[in-house]
Each structure stands twice: as structure tokens, then as C-alpha cells.
Image (cartoon, rainbow, N blue to C red; front, side):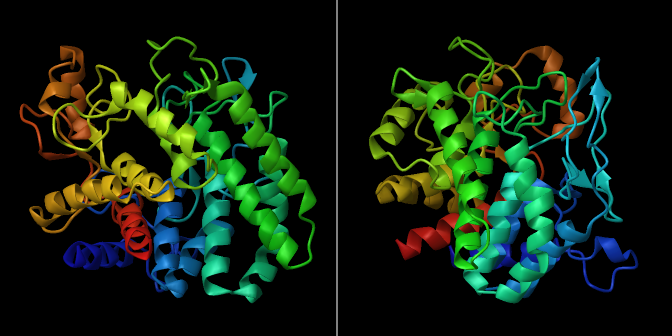
Length: 398
């Protein structure tokens, strides 16, 4: 694992825009992938996991620069956004991009089917922000940005909570734009944890915390009330009600067990048992797919998901299972210059693919005739190197 860790650290460093960049607002941003990977732009989501990894490595200067990039970036353009007669905007002044950033540090989210408006970004950033402060004990940084983070990130999350105690519908963890907005478990889950961690820091610094701890509990309760099925597992979103629905079984749900929001071991074990029937890769490989579908970008093995499950296993005392996943990913990386990819192909899953999806290989690099090949964006940073480091550090600390 040592070689993969060292290469992953190098990738984290390489992916961060330097402090002497000609565009001042671009400094510190972290790319989701390095070339030739297609995702060589800065996403909030990927960047947040990368920042967490930097914090846990003790690379505090780099982590702080990643946070300050987003805190100083040119964002707030989607306070209101009308699509098909409905306002999908954030609804309040906000600071963190709803999707990603241009290279010059300006918020970006465009597509023919409407932009991706991703409310989980606020929660993921808040988690990374609080994680950095806890790891570094940087009280000066916390106090410097507290008003901004409170008013334009934490308060934004609170105001996004719907009457059913879930975060309002958004584009979701897999970026389905505004044509398929739903209330996703992933979104409510990471926002809940972000508020929980923020409330703890607010309390530590004798600042208002009750508002955020109450909102965290409300969201957690909303997840358990709306998403728990058969008292056994958590479904992916509010809208899908049949086991045959596209995102009923959604690997994004694993995040609420990986990040510690849900600490019920019995529920975790029954959830895994149910999800293994639909999302576990067939055969001896310990990996998982994103969604059970005919789309090769969704039904291949996602390394990000594998590594979050490895962390969840650790949280619930399943160190052997966690080690199996980590060893498997490490073996693949060792055979590929110690890089972590977006996905790994699986022949059985590819055989499910409909011919109409072959053309998407132009952008996804995910259509293969053989299994066990690196596919997607290579190398991945936050969703690759970052989460590999987080899971590996946790494994050896456990």
C-alpha cells in the first residue's frame, strides 16, 4: 500500500492549482482528475474528499488553500433558476458552487437539460471545513470565516430542509441535471453530518450551535422516517418506491454509514445484505456498482463506492471485509502505476448494456469488451486518491 499512498499524495499535490497562478481566484482549487482523465476541472464534491485526505495527512496548508479557494470563489449565480416553470435555485444567498468551477474560479454548471444544482455540496464542504479545523486546531481560520460559513453555507442547508425533514429535491449525487430531480438520501445524509460537525465546533467556540444541532437531528429523523424500508435497509431517494425503479438501490446510500451519520450496526448489516443482491459485482471480486441499470457508466464497478464501503465496514467492526476491498484496489493500482481510476470494467455488467449506450464511450471511456480494465477518468483525485487515503489511514488506525 505504501507505493499507492505515496503516489496518491503526489496526485493530490499535483491536482491543486499553485499560489502563483495568474488568475487569483483559481489558486488552491483541486481538480477532480488529472489528464488524460476527462474530469480535469474542479468539483466541490471531489474537492471536499481531497481536502479531508489532506487534513488527515497533516498537509494543513494545502487543505486550508483548498477550503479558501471555495470560500473566496465567485459563486452565487443560482439563487434562483427557473426550469420548466419551476424554481430549482438555492433560494438564499450562498457561497459554495452548486456544481463545479471554471479554471478562473467562477461557479459553473451548465447543460442542455438544465444545470446540475447539487445541495449536497454545502454539506460536503461543511464536513471538510470542520474536519480541517478539528485536525489542525486552527482556531484563527475558524473565527476568520465563521460568519461567512454560518450565513452562506450552514444557514443555507437549514433553509433547504423541506416540510418532510429532507433536503429539497436536487440533481443528486450522480448529476442527473434538472430533468430527474429527487430528494436523495445521499444529499440529506451529508448535509446532516455537516450540520452535526458544525454544531460541535460552534459549541466549542461558544457560538450559536442549537440551531444546527436541531437541524441535524431533523434531517437524520427525516431519513429514517422516509427512506427506511422494511426496517431493514435505506433506499436511494423518496420518489422511487418499487425495487425495480432506477435509483431505488443507490450506492450513494453507503455514505451515511461511511461518514458515521448512522451508527446502528444491525441496520448496516441488514442494509448490506439487501444491497449485495443488487449492487455487488458478480463473482469473486469484492466491488460494487453504482446503480443497477443498462448504462455502462452506472453499472460498472465504482472505486469511490468500494472505498466508502471499506470505511463503513471499519466503522462497524468488519475489518476483514474492509481489508479485502483495500487489498483488491491496491493490487489493481500496483498493476497500473499506482493510480486509482474512476471505475473498473466488469464483463457481466457490460453484457447488460444496450447498444444505444455504446456511443457514450466518447466521453465516459467506459465501454469495454473485457472485464477488469481501468475505465472512466484516470487518475481520479478526490474520488480516487483522496478516499483511498482516508480508508487506508482509518484501516491502520483501527
